Image (tube, rainbow, N blue to C red; front, side, top):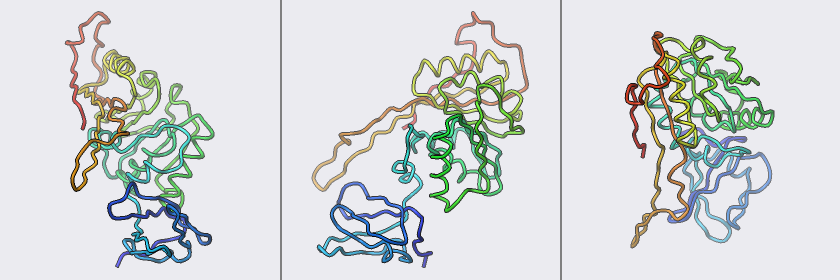
Length: 282
C-alpha cells in the first residue's frame, strides 16, 4: 500500500467519463466543494491514492495525487509558465541528467523548476534566477507545495541574467527570457565545455536573433530548433474530435552545445554556412 494522502500536498478528484479533474491542496480542516459536492479535508487525510469516495448526493469520485504535468498546468501563477509540452523537449534535447548543475532563468511561476529538479535529483543543483519579487515568491511557493517544503537542491537568486551569471561550472543553462541572445556572452564563462545551452521563446524572430548570436560567438555547435506543437483530442464512445480550446503552438526551443572557440562567422555569411536543424515537436 502506498503512503496515505498528507496535509499540505496537492490532491485531485477524478470521475469516470467527466471533464477535467479537480485539483486542490489538502488542509487539516475545512471542506472542499467539488462541483457542488462537499468533502471534509480531515476525512481525506491518510487515504490511499486511488480511493473511492461517494458524495451525499450519490456522486462517485476517486482521489489521487496529481501528476507533475497536471500540477504545472493547474498550480497558482501570475505569469506564463513553461508547460509540459515545452518541458519535455527541454529535458530530452537539453539532455538533463541526475547530478547536473543547472542554471534556469527566469524562474517565472516555477513550472520548469519542478521538472528540472526531478531530472537532476537530490545530488544535482538548480540555480533559478529572476529579477521580479513576485516571481521569486510564487516560484518558491509552488516548488514548496509540490515537494512539501524548500527543495535542498534548489537555490533561488534575484539576479539579472542579462548582466551576469554568478554561478559557474554549469552543465546546463536553460533560458526563459525575452532576449536570450543577451545571455550568450555570460554562458561562455559559466557553462562547462561540452555543456548545453537551451532557450524557449514564443516567436521565430526571437529564435532567429538567438541563433545568430550563438553563431557569432564562435563557441556553440550542433544547433537544433524545435517548434513545440501539441493537439489534444476528445475520444468518446461515438465521437472523436480535437479539443475546441486547444492551443497547439506556444513557441520554439533552441538547443546548442558549448565547444572550444573558433573564429566567428562573418556577418555577411549565408545561413547555409552554419548548422541548423529545424523539427516540429508533437
